[in-house]
Every structure is written in C-alpha cells, then in structure tokens.
Amino acid sequence: MKGKLWHLWPTALLLCIFIIPGAGQVSAQIRVISANPVSEAIIELAEAFERMTGYPVTVEVMGTNAINQLLASNEPADILVGTLAIVDQAVADNHASSPGIPVARVGIGIIIRDGAPAPDVSTVSALRQAALEADGVIFNTAGSGQSVGRMFEELGISEQITPKSARPANAAETMDRMRAGQGMEIGFGLLSEIRPYEGNGIVLIGRLPEELQTWINYEGIVLHRSGTPAIATEFLKFLVSDAARETFAATGVD
Image (tube, rainbow, N blue to C red; front, side, top):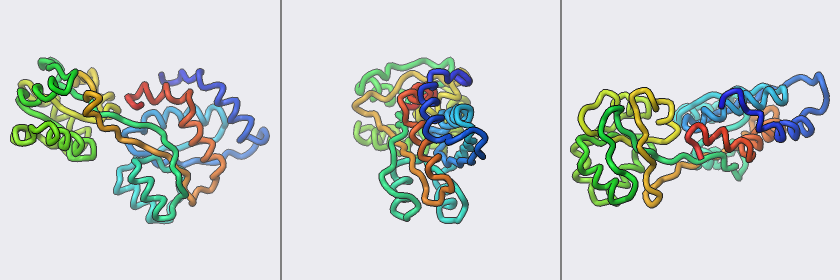
C-alpha cells in the first residue's frame, strides 16, 4: 500500500484548488498528535498530503498521559486524533471547539501463537468455549483489555478466566507474552495493534463476534492553538475522505 496512493488523486486535485492559492507560496508545517491504534494510516496519509500539496505534516504518536500534558502546556500543535473521551475532554477544557470529526474505529481481534492449535471463535458460544478450554488467556490492562474483561463478565465466565489470565500493560507486551507462551493460549487486542505482529510469531484467528464486538472510536479535531487552522482543517477533511478509507482498512482500521 505504501507509496501507492494514486487512487487519492481526485482529493489531491481538490486540495490543490482550495488550499494552495499560488505557486511558490511558503509551506506551513502541520503537527498532528495521534493515538497509536490509528497512527499507521495517518502517517501514510500525511506523506500523501505533503506530496499532493507541498504542505508538510508531522505525526507524533502519544499515549493519553502525554496528550494531556501537551494540552495542558503552551506547546504548539494543530490537530488531535484520539478517542472520543480524549477529544471530548479537549473540547471541555477549551482546547478546541466541538464537534470532533469521526476518523476511524478499531475493533478487537483474537490471536494465538504461531504453531498453536486454533480454536473456533466464529460465534459467541464457540468463543466462550474456547476461552474456557484455553490454557491461558492474555489481554492487556488498557482500554481494549478492559472491554475484554467486561465481555467475560457478560458471558458469565469471569471467575474461570481470571485465574489463568495474564494482563500485560500494552499491545507490545501482549504480543511478546503471546509469542513466549506455551500450550493452547488465546489473546485479545486491537486489530490495528495486532497487524504489525502477524507473521512474526502471532496469528490472527478472527474478530470478536459482532454481538460481542467493542468498537473504539477515534475523532479528529483542530486545536485552537493551531497556527494554520485552515490548512489543518483541509488535512482533517483529507483523513475522512472516501479515498482515505482504503488506507485505514489496510492497517486493520475500519
């Protein structure tokens, strides 16, 4: 996918018409602060935007604490892409004006160690049985892992799962734990965070059944502190264009 965004040319043409008033104009630097699960596609789209318009875009990946620290400071930034909770808090604290623009959503996938037997997880009852029969169940302590924990409670098997579960702090630690595991273990994580590890000791065996799926939604918003709000707005529109959907989908993001 990288370097092959020719399908975005209609958007590029519109951008050239509306946000590049004349040749030779000095380019503005756009700084985007992004949550990790959607950052891969945003980085690729930022590169495409720069090629199309001449306006450079830098994408910095930050966790919740780092985002909050930046917003509390006077540090310049143009666009924030984060969870609904983060964007809503930014608006409440007057760092931006509502509403945020929906950018993407990420679902939860189910993984096994490469070479381990793959259980049936295609239905609610099959997933419930697979979790009960697994030697271990791995899911993080972050937002997606909390959703998985609530799922086990709803399925009525939390008491059976807890003693054999491991709860790493984040996606990278979850993948490392899965690769180092033994027996028939299953793990859970955001699809966009699983994707980089596929073929590297991790096998994605499916998504949560739709009845159990928890979508984590991400929105984008132009910050009041932006020095170039008009161009930042155009980049945000570019992120949510129909053409950009293909780039997000290639990274495990809906």
